Amino acid sequence: RALRGHHHKPKTKEYWALKNISFQVKKGEVLGIIGKNGAGKSTLLKMLSRTTEPTAGTITMRGKVSSLLEVGTGFNPELTGRENIYLNGAIIGMTKKEITTKFNEIVEFSGVGEFLDTPVKRYSSGMYVRLAFAVAAHLDTDILIVDEVLSVGDAEFQKKCLGKMSSLASSGRTVILVSHNEKVVLELCTSALYIKDGVIALLNSPEKVVAEYYRTISSTSKKVFTGPLKESISVNSIIINHSKQKIVSITPDEEISIQVKSECFKKLLNIRITMAIYLGDIRVMSMHDTDVSQDLKRGSFVSTFTLPANILRPGEYDIYVGGYQEKTKLWFYGERLKKFIILPIWSRENQEHNIVLIV
Image (tube, rainbow, N blue to C red):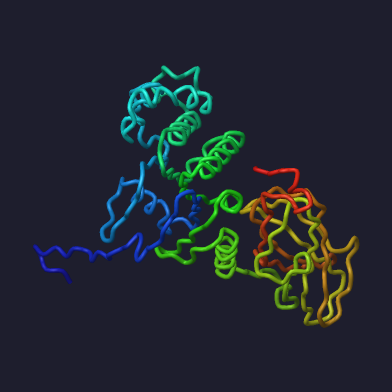
């Protein structure tokens, strides 16, 4: 019971957005940073961009830094697009003459030339990002830092941005980017950093880091079985393209073969097994393993599903498996039982044609 006149302040818990983070990025590298929301990715970029000072530790950066963190960062909304180009260049230490030499290239890349003398506060979010990225990428800097703002732009502009970041790295610039789109990390980056709960979970090649990220989120995702038949049938394993790996990576032009190995604990009549493919929370497709219902004996059985090539766009997919008894309408259902990735690249046979799929 509280005494009159005494106020008890709630206890505050100390929270470190990042702790014991230590890594190096060499000149010309493209470092991709991935992790779940709240892991500390954006905080790290803010510290690298010097918009947030670290509570402890030091950051050593050699060269001029240009960053694109949030829509609107670094722009004065009252100034026109033209004025903001010169303002941003002056902030990173460029002379007016140096900015002028890059001016036409920036405007052409951004595609907002018609609105160049309009105050940017009247720009749409897409226009804002187009101009902001064009400025950040074309001014004379040594390090480009980009957060997940490119998701605001359209697919064509995202493709231009990826190409530009790739060419910057080829010319010796350093690029550090945060992305929730792992296919961008796989395609663009030379190394990757997986941040989990404010610490480095893995710093390695993009392929190894993305695989570890998927392995982690796959092992922690819920595998919920529901329905009246959930005690009668269990799904033991799912094999994709003969691979038993926890996360299977597939190119778009590969046919996908999925084997679902299950166990039936008692005889069941008129059963149909169904598989569904989800992209996030959206069901992309579903199919039955047989054209007609079948009787299941007690013991193990295998259901096979085949997806034709070029039917799924690049992304991260989850497999759901269910079954139902046609006469009684009894059913069971299992969510997120297996994860696979459609990569944004074609098979080795087609890579010689320099085809890159970006969606």
